[in-house]
Amino acid sequence: MLAPFLKRPRPAEPFVSRSAGWETKSRPVTRLAPLVATGCVSFTAAPTPFVDDNLAEETFARYVGWQIDQGCGGLVVCGATGEGATLSRAERIRLIEIAVETASSRAAVIATTGTNCTRESITLTEAAQKSGASAALLLTPYYNKPGQRGLFCHFREIARAVDLPLIIEIDPARAAINVECETLARLAEVPNIVAIAHADGGLARLRKLRPSAQASFAHLCGTDDDYAEFCLAGGSGWISNAANIVPAVWSALQRAIDARRWDRAMLTHMALQPLIFALQMESGPAPLKYALSLLHPWFSPQVRLPLTPVASETATAIREALAGL
Image (cartoon, rainbow, N blue to C red; front, side, top):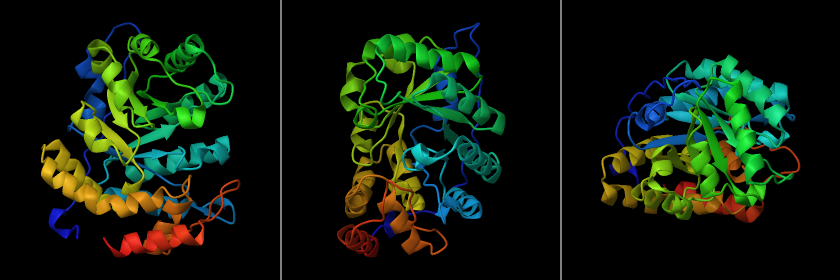
């Protein structure tokens, strides 16, 4: 069904990190260049493979290499899809190192380093920079629910500690806190905060931002349902879960959107709907890992508690969706 939309995957564009100091305020186009140099961009939210509850390092390296060979331009590691909440500091750093070594400048590696502790977030972000990550993804602090002033200070302190492009992820469903447009406008003055990842889709927020603040960031959609409308509304790209399963298709979809071939993009999107729906039947990466294990027997479907393997209904829907591609 998707074959007409696939072309030979193009080599991934190198990701060149351009640092921004506090002494001078770079123009928005300069700050955004590392993330959106090739137009609309798609990043894959990478899962973390386990064997007997330990990191499967060789499997992860193989997975990263496969994604890049299929045309993936960048991966987000240690995020929600990567079960970052269950990873130790040492495990996080090791995964970042493996991704950077395997990517070898062929694709971006975005390291998720944000926690609900500013000090720990700084330590992880410094480690990501030392490991050679292209950028760091900072979650809004969960559980302790700071106010808007606390959020601003949290992100500002992390930015002051590193010379690395930073992406703020806004996910009210997981963090139980939002970053208001006024706070984003203040954060636009921090030179190395270069992008916002809208895990909730972000269309309403994107439209509410005043033009100067909107133009100061790259805006990434965090859901596989809303990316087309998000890009039409001025978004720069998205972070995808389904791209794990069909990276070549997702690369073709990205090229279609970048070329404003909305007819081709929507046909591909509709063909992917059963898969997207099946992957969302349960929260967390368990459905994704199950699908990957069907396609690649070398990738284990194991998840860490408190997550559990998929239910039989979900497994059936995933198998049917894959059979229909």
